[in-house]
Image (cartoon, rainbow, N blue to C red; front, side, top):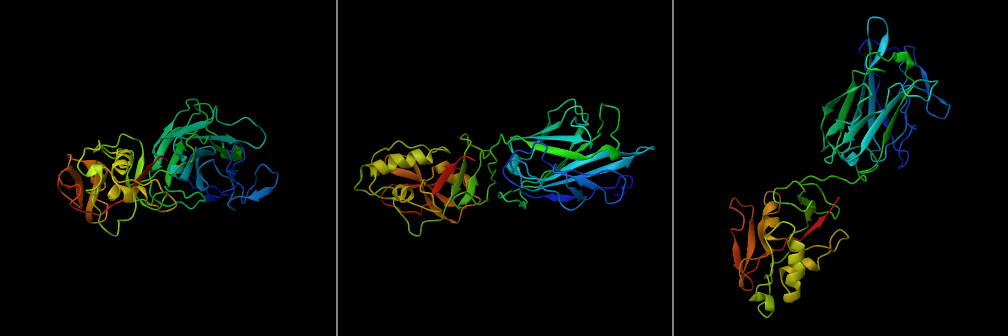
Length: 347
């Protein structure tokens, strides 16, 4: 394979093999200056560079790896290694990369280069100190749909540069036989959602852990608007003229619904409590601030909240709205509004 100075090595897609931690079972990249160099992938079988070498990490089934060499005035040396198409499924993981020649089990780096992927799946910090590389974040992308087999989303890219074997000595390109990439799977490979995404039940993500006022650490998705309007509580039930004991906070909707259902024979909370959608039945009537938090994304309408204002009144929410929170309220049993069922979950 002919490498010109600063020429980028051909990229290749890393296709899924299995849910496993890659430990040496990785991909081999030939950096020798010969044409169409043959390389081995742990099986002893020769594979011509550029044919698409297969491996996976614990959480990401579709990575793109590329490398470059440069001429240092005497010889071609390894210049950069780039890892791309990193999905947000890799959050809270350590990615560990090592370089090997064809004869030794000892890596060419003094220690593997370890990159910690943050909880957002899109922040990267090199935690190793004696690997003699420098980390550069090339691209942050948390929205592009990936091409893997695990519903991957995101295509961030990072690059290792200033690569040396001991802090000063460059690594000859023709010494590099393979790279190994490992991940520890600590994050559980769980998806990270953004507002507007489709949730696990098929609803719309309206509240994420970073939404202002959300201290629960949970995601919230809302389902379809009820086809008819409902009272908060029928006049014949205790809850119509008594304080049930609800809260307006984000995270209170589920507990509010339990309290209302105990004191109301029908109404919006009962509708939400009995609602099933997408194979899930853990829906509830949102609290006033849960409804307000989705004001920019929810369908137009007038909605019941599960939050009382007084013995006879409960908060409702007109959407969309430019009014402040807790602005709208109506009578518990003599007015009606639609219901927008909501559920919360952790990733």
